[in-house]
Structure formats: structure tokens, C-alpha cells
Length: 237
Image 1 (cartoon, helix red, strand yellow):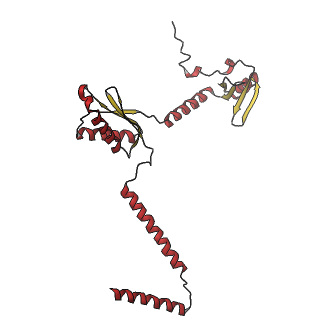
Image 2 (tube, rainbow, N blue to C red):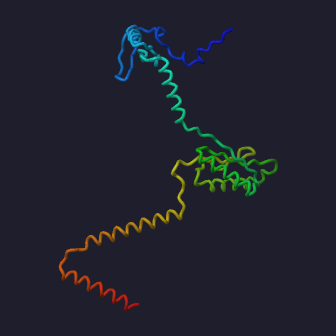
Image 3 (cartoon, helix red, strand yellow):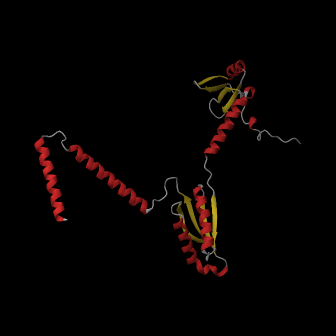
């Protein structure tokens, strides 16, 4: 028995030419749209050596394009590929701990979690309590909170540690680019630079306000006042 591949073949998902059996259609192109009898649209397509392609069968009347069908399918495939490339695929990566994970194993898994978050993936970290180790659930919670704190610059907590059966879960989502938390040292440096810039502007304003072409008497008075200040300063030293 021959299998029907019409649904699997993308060439069969659009009606073209004589397959379009409605009385009238709406033709769309770069100049806009217009409604005309289907027979007239078919005649125009034949004259141009292309096809009448139905692109929106549920519209009233159905919407069609006059275009080479192979070219139309290529354009649709290209659009679908571009849309797929624009979609950001977010995966959930799992990190598993024991309630008494040592520092070496912890740092190894912390490194992987940073890489996952930088790639835009979510992280689901959990502590698995085997047998009587459930008695150490507080220890597991502390471990997950430490994990969340160490990843603060890379992700934000979506769900705080929560016990479900024999597992305690923590969910962390990646931060958007540019949202990494600034260190206190960096913030202090930026504040000092801003204050220095403001002081420089103020000094420049005072210099501009000083009369350059004033009279000799005014300049002399200013020079004498400056000399007195210098002498007083030297005397105090």
C-alpha cells in the first residue's frame, strides 16, 4: 500500500493554480491588494509564466500571491530558518550535590554552573538525601544558599531551596547581559571619579568668571591679596 506523503511534503501545504476553486481571491503584492475573479488571477499568472499561490485560505476572500511557486517555497523556508535562529533556546541544566559535598567537588560544580548561566541556560541545583542523610536537610539548605550567593553575579534565584521528597531544589535563572552586580570597590571608584569631575567643573567656572582684561589696579589688588595669603601660610608653617 502506497503511503500518502502529502502532509509530510511542504510542497503540498499550499493550493496553487487550478487547485484554487473559489470564485474570487484577494491578490497581494508590493503595491497593495485587490480582489478579482479567480479566473482573471489565473490568466495573469499564466501570462507572467508563474503561479497563483493561496497563502491564506481562511480569509474572505482567500488571499493569494502571483509568484513562482518554487521561489515562494524558498522564501518561506528562509523566513522559517531566520525565525528559528532568532529564538533563544533556554535549557535547564542540573547540578547535583550530596548533603556533605567537599570543597573540591563544590568548586567544580560551581564552575560549571557559571558556564551554564553565561550561556543563557537556567540551573536547577539540588541536594539528594539518601537514606538517613535526610537528617542533614538543614546542612543541604545552607549548601544551596551558599551556591546561590556565589552565583549572584551570574544569575538570580527563581525559587529558594525547597524540599520535595528526598531532594531539595534551588532554581537560578541567568541574568541579562550588563546586569552583573558591581563590586563595592568599583562603585567607590566611580563615585570618586564623579566627585573629581564635579570639582574640576567648579574650578573651571571660577577661572572663567575671573576678569582677564580688568584694570591694573584690580589686578594689583588681587596679586597683593594672593601674596598675603601665601605669607600667612608660610608663617603658620
